[in-house]
Length: 424
Image (cartoon, rainbow, N blue to C red; front, side, top):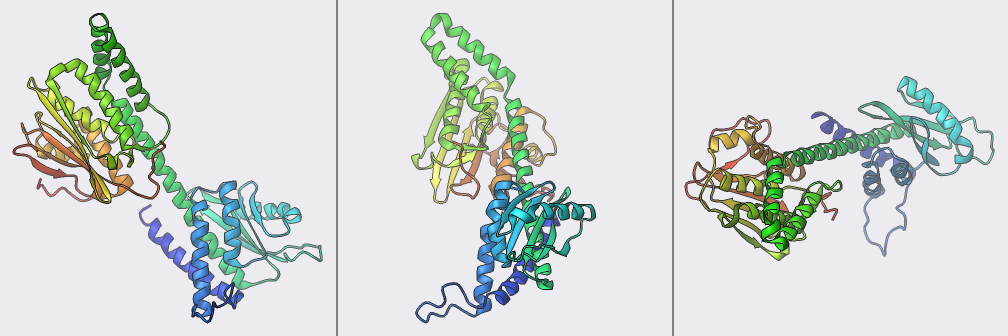
C-alpha cells in the first residue's frame, strides 16, 4: 500500500493536465467573459483553473465510496470536467447516477455493456446504436473504476461523435475516480482500526477497578446512604460513557467529566491518600479529542501512585491553551518507571501490563489522527513519578466531536520504522 499513493498522485496530475487540455479545446471562452477588461489569463490558463476547481468539488463525495448518493453528487461535476453530452456512474449491478439526457432509453443498454466490460476488465468505446433522431448520444466510452477488489463499476461518457480525445480523457478521469475510491477505502480501514483500538481500551478497563468500585459503594450503604447513592450515579455515568457506541471523538469537557467520575470512585476506595488537582483553561473545553484518550493516562497515574505504594498520591491534571493547540498533562508522584522500559513499551517491543497497553494505545491513536509529531511525551524515572504530556490541535480536518518530578527523563516514542537511538 505504501507505493499506491505516489502512483495515485501521478495518475491524478496526469488526469487533470490532460483534462485541462481537453476542456481548453472544448471551451474557447471562460463563462462570463472578461470583467471590465481585467486580465483573467489565457484560455488555457482559465480552462486549467476550471478543471482543477471542478475536480476539487467532485472529490469529497467520492471519498465516501461508490454509493448512490456519492455518485449522484459527483456525476454532474465529472460531466462538466469532461464536457460530454451525458455521463453515468455504475457499480457492478446497476446505474448509480446519470447526468444529462437519454437516461430513459440508454441505462439498460449501458448496464449490458458494463457487464461485458466486467468480464474482461478493459474499457470499451462503442456506438450507442440509438435510433431516436433527437438523441445526441451517438458514442459511448466505458472506463472501468477499480479498487483493491478489482473492477468496482464503470464511468460511462457519452458524446455526439466518435472521439479519440474523449476516450483518453474519460480513461484518465476514471483512473482519478478510482484513486478517490481507494482513498475512501483507506479512510474506512482507518476508522475500523480506531474502533478496534477503542474496543481494546474498553476491554482493558480493569475488572478489579469495577469490583473495587462496587465494593466501596457497598461499604457506604449503611454508614452514608447519600454518598453511596451519589457514587452509584457516578459509576453508572462513567460506565455509560466508557462503553458508548457512537463517535470516534468527544470534547475535552466530556473526557474530563468522565475522569472526574473515575477519580470520585477511586477516592471512595483510597480516601485521603488520593489528592487531585485540576488546572483547566475554559478556552480548551470545547476542543475535540479522541474518545478515551485521557482516561487510560489518569488510570495509569492512579495505579502507579497508589496501588504500588503506601504513601500519599498527588495527581495534577492540567489543560492549557497554547494558541493553535491545547496542551494536556497528567502528573503523578508515584513509583515512576525505567525510561528504557518505557521506550520499549511505546515502541511496541514489550510490556504487556494494562498500563503499558493503555499508554501504547493512546500514543498510536494520537499519531494516527494528528501525525507522528503528536505522540505522547513522557517524563519519568524510577522513584521520580511520571508526567505525560499530550498536544492536541484545536482544529483538524475530519476531527470533530459527536458530541514536575525530580530526576525524570524525557521519553518520546521514535518515528515508525526507525530504530530507537537509545537516548532518553
